[in-house]
Image (cartoon, rainbow, N blue to C red; front, top):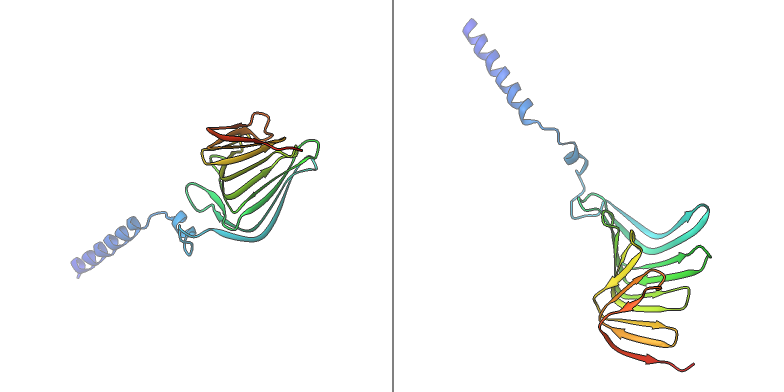
Length: 183
């Protein structure tokens, strides 16, 4: 009977050992239960986000829908139904950005604007593009897609654009033509 009990105890210890060693700390996996990696972590509808700096409004973002993909290794927010963004400078002059679709990447600070992108500056300069990238860290706009840029009386068509956000260093690339409008 002693041998039977020792075999029984040995078997129980083996089972406990196997169970304990097969259980890994999968807390991150447990947190994801019910959330597919292909699905957003959250959905916000009818957003109207106001950003301030020292009590002064610097931006107002409006969008019908925002999808939060913070459950991904490369975190991003997607605006599948477009954005309407007002930006205010130090003199409270407003610039506006409209796009049919936008995606903002958290780690790089790059915003990809797509579809009927229109950027209107406080100086009445207007950029029309199918796609435009905005580097938030450098405050820089760029694209290699066709653009139309209206500045003063000139309408410039080209295949790319590179500029600071205030259009002080605006450059249309591979110019196709320039039209000067009469006032």
